[in-house]
Structures are given as C-alpha cells and as structure tokens.
Length: 77
Image 1 (cartoon, rainbow, N blue to C red):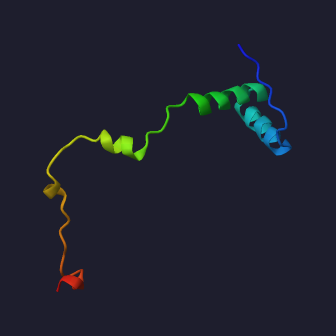
Image 2 (tube, rainbow, N blue to C red):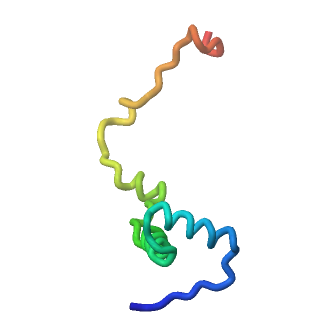
Image 3 (tube, one colour):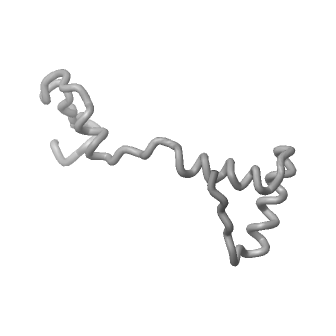
C-alpha cells in the first residue's frame, strides 16, 4: 500500500477531521482514508445529455402536448 502525506492543511480542517473521526470511533488517519475512498470511488455522475439519451422512446410527441385552459389564460380569449 502507498503512503500519503498531506501538508499545509488549515488547522480548522485538521480539527474537523479529528472531531469527525472521534464521532465514528476511529483514528483521524482512518477517517481520512474513509473520506478519500468515498470521494474517489463513487460512481461518476451522468451528464444531462447521457441521462436523456438513455431514456426509452415511448409514446408519441402528441401524447405529451399541454392542454391550455382558456379560463386560466386570458390571452386565448
């Protein structure tokens, strides 16, 4: 396994890490490993275009046409 040294960390950040570690009952080093693992190994988010391209082609465009209510929108009177 590799070793990682992080220098010039703000004191507030180091203290927050120690507090979070104590809340989880682990060392600051173990908490640091956990945070790095969660941040770097989670699945990457899909872009909006990727999500749209994966949507199934269902129905016709006319199925999704909005109906205008003339009583609500006086522009159509």
